[in-house]
Length: 234
Picture (cartoon, rainbow, N blue to C red):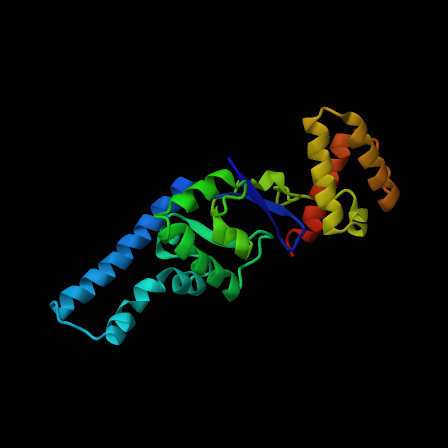
């Protein structure tokens, strides 16, 4: 499963799965049905009446601009994407600007409509960020709104309501310090490398002045819990 990490204001990276080509095709088909339904309804209401070129363009414009207007209005979601729980985001995790949506829409005429979706399918399948041509140019991608990162994967810890912090000195650390601590702690565990955990524990003790007889892993977990207690409820 391809994923993308999105940083939060607390310097915590949350991981979301990138929408698969199948996800995007289903969302696209829903949107096509909505556009087709609109055009069919208009044609039925007109009863086959002949219209001028200008009137025809005006009436069909909502269907033509559908994906651009809905993504701008709904923060990166067409109705199809909303039903499939997907959203357009920038590669850095921020919300796209109007120009980003516009570029996706313009080049969507090429890689989706212009090639019957074949170019979009090929590029999203081969690109590690699941990007079609319009996404590559706009610097965007489409993610599923399903967190891969679990609560326990962040610096935050589930605490008992009667929890009492042990090391108030953790106030000398920043969110970024704790994010690094979490990352290194996980890397040390995955690699079964106690040395890196020992070095991290010494560094935390040097910065905070804390003295502890706990083993280094327990000490670092306690630091995370204390930090969460002091700052996670604000």
